[in-house]
Length: 159
Ligand code: GTP
Image (cartoon, rainbow, N blue to C red; front, side, top):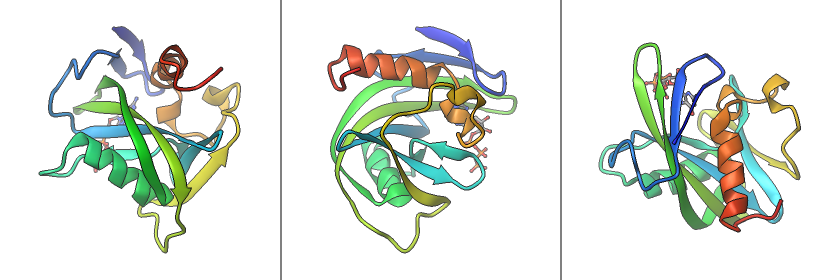
């Protein structure tokens, strides 16, 4: 398990075990790959981030992952793989998120991208993402760096 502070100095616990903190997480976060590029969404206020959000009542985490990716980017998830789970101890509440890796092979244009401005395709993520104001705070802690390493370890992407 990894423990570190996020952008707002909240404590985060991250693990690549099978749902170590909760079998009923509240949120999902989906690292998306489309034909050799990263697929993110442009969240108006927060900036660029991998898509994700809250799991709705009666919905499974995997269903929420597929839905959120579609809503925020227009992308159809071809293959979804569980990566890990993290817990953020916020000032007011605690949140638990499942992290997934999604392979995408089709992105459809839509009339709305819900709370976001839609898809952003990037060949590479920038070197110093922590100092880059275009990027959301959720991209600025150990969840992204450890998850990226994990993708390479699992052989799901090449470095
Ligand atoms: P509503 O209940 O819809 O109002 O959402 P909210 O604005 O309270 O946000 P949410 O429940 O999604 O998250 C609550 C807090 O947890 C946020 O303000 C963040 O500080 C933190 N948080 C949420 N998602 C992440 C994440 O992916 N990474 C980190 N580090 N913190 C997060």
